[in-house]
Length: 154
Image (cartoon, rainbow, N blue to C red; front, top):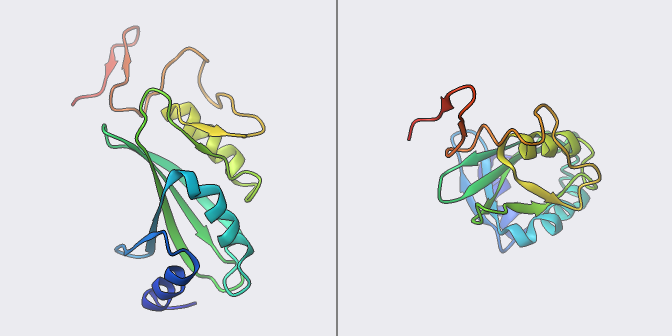
């Protein structure tokens, strides 16, 4: 397992287009959405640190954009990085799937679609996981449910 400084240097060489920061615990990479799939393959297929395990995937609604957050780990070296990609389009948020890179992404992406309405391009089975098709997206800041009187405060 490398130090965060060593990991940041390694990532700068591997992903020169990434914005690299040190979070409170992990190295954080911010990747342009159009480079996300390419980046996922580079992370997984790297011989020195093969990031072969997607631990988690979630999204955050910042009102002006969505951010999809991935935690990926190398089971060989035990290095872990957080990868973020921003989606500016609220009306039709989408980013490429990585379910073909890490199989664990398939259900994580379905959950993010179900809760935020983020579409994952080329996903093999993108459909609601928990909620009815017409329910809305309850983790969005602008979510309202007039039937159950659920409205998130601003």
